[in-house]
Length: 379
Image 1: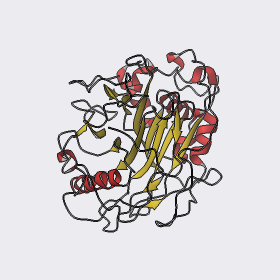
Image 2: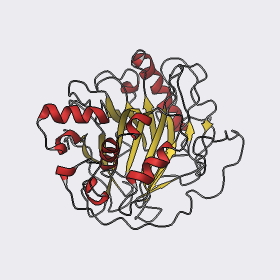
Image 3: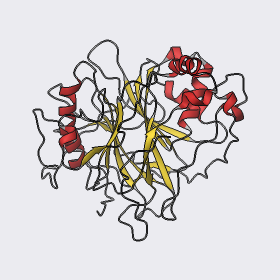
Image 4: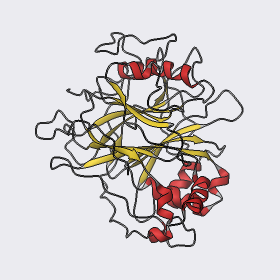
């Protein structure tokens, strides 16, 4: 359906519209949105923007067009080795498949278990994480646990942005009811993705129905003309394992609230660690047309649970290519299974999940992506 390229609305639209008019359950998500303005010099000291304040002019920041970095020769035998040179520490990204003559992007979600100082002290783990990030144009990260406001900046500069790469970040506030706070983040490749800096916010939760309120941001692909580029909103979430069912019902309201706040954008993609499989999404899974893309596969490192997913409104997001799955990075260690598992568990108890999308809006003539396939293909 057509897109509106106006700025992202600061408050929930009063009218509702489409099938996103009312939500099941109780709560008042999105009455006022907590807006997190990205501050490049101090990423986690973001002021709250008044809901009545006029948005800044201009849809996307005027960041320079960057050329994609040249592919790096893959050396899977050295995958993640701290002593290896930067050129061989991370395997070359696996390019998305072209669709109908046009490019594609891959969006991933990754719960990096207790991502903080302990992992940062292990270069092998950090090189492995950088190698994983390189396979995707955007990665939604959950479970960042650190008091260092520049933790993600250091991760990018020291590991991810080697060999001419230029990933940037959106980092949310520290959230949680206990003393153990967590942050969400989006890492995105600026050579292929633009961020709408006016679109970043944390969904308000006045009834305290979620332990960690989702971080939301809008993006657009680089390459296609602006009026033909795929625009989309990502909703980053990590549910609490002790209250998952109640939180999934609440996320149905969150999904609707984000849709109403999106200024006409119809591609709303919720992704993260849901702590349930694809058959138990509660009221979120009962929204008309809303479907999980990861089905019938395990997403944890031990390969016995499906916790992570990417959820979208299937009729709207025809840009989805039908390709999605789990990125099994332990296989790249080229070790016996038990040894590979032990090394992988130092990285995380989760595996990344990913989905592929056309870089062009599906409504653009001649650039319509294929409809979702019946089966999900694992990486």
